[in-house]
Image 1: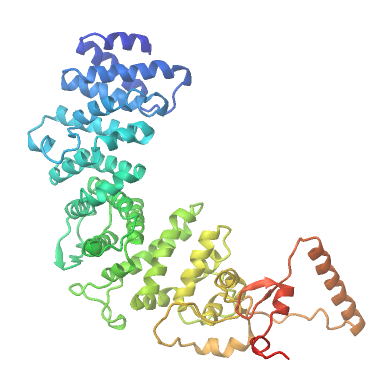
Image 2 (image 1 turned 90 degrees about the horizontal axis):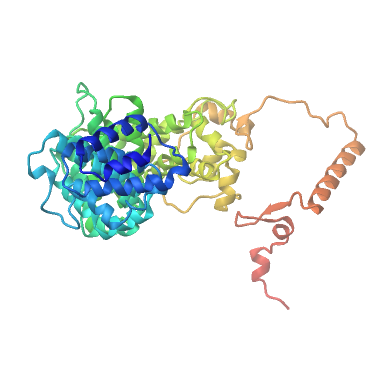
Length: 538
């Protein structure tokens, strides 16, 4: 389509022709996301022309069509110069019914609207989302205009409002909070957005309280969460994640964080229309739970009205089991990004186990039950333990460390217990990082409840290879038929090979200091004993 023709029409006052021409362009380019770089200048002028039309008093149908065109053009960050200015942002904010820096007043929920007027608001919000995402200048203009304050006002007035208005208001708030740390700070302190978004979640998910921090459990026979409600809830969770990224140790926010934890427990218990959407909801819940103080995680298991398990002091482990199931799904997902998809839930379960005894005890029964099968290597098999042990030697350092730390905490940070379940070879990386190669425990204090070994493990323990963590089949000794001279020759040959590799700096022989840390071999061997250090010299 000829852009010059569109530009010349935009300069007229003929709304019908403008609408007709732009409608044709929109139909042809609705699915376009890549643009010809040679046309950047004329598309930038088209953005300016559209803003000029939108700044005039034109009909709602013409406004909506112009905004649809601008939304398509705003997918290209290189043509947003005219839109990213304060004047351009003011035009879009006005059409979205967002007042500059004010929390009251011109809210679209305060007056009856036609369907076309609502479409204008939604299209303006969509344009603002694209422009803010693609333009640093628009982000600065949005911050200067206090656009976030207007969005908060819109959300406060839209409790029973329209789906798309609420959805794109939340999405725009998410973008501003993600891209502008100063806006994020203002939302936290001045606009009390954490409390507002918590209320949005309560309303959207139809949360009913039966205790201080206990929501009524979802009816197992109820329909899944509607797709529209789920969409708005996900945007609210993402924005709350941004707002809780900073320090959450503020005592004044303790009640608010426990309330969020209770709502997130409710999210974990809900099901949506598809398994994929349910997993997405659980992922956002995990991310947000990871930001909350660990002292709030007891809300996940302390639900007196619903009841719990006697063996875990009456605590309810349904949410913890859901988190374990989610973790295993992420481990099993072929081709997934473990760093983004798995490490958040590993860290969450690790910290929950470290600080809450009942959570640790329950997870250990599921992940590290008493050992019976000791003839198979710990990393071989399909149990959750086997899968986690395999991750202890993963190529990604973060994944490897988080999996090892999780198992270590389940073993109450006891090196002997960890080696029992994983073998020395799989645990070596963690022990080196922790300075525990000589054995011992980590720094966290745990309860004194004892681990009981099975009869199978006790009988097989003397025959378990500590490196591989399993009972190996008897193998022929390759040195059995060698003479002493041959053995000495092979030993000297091996020493020479190590010496050559060491001199070429291809390997570096290491030893373990008495404090359990690694050091070059000559340093470890020559480390003075405590007795020699304290003895008097002549």
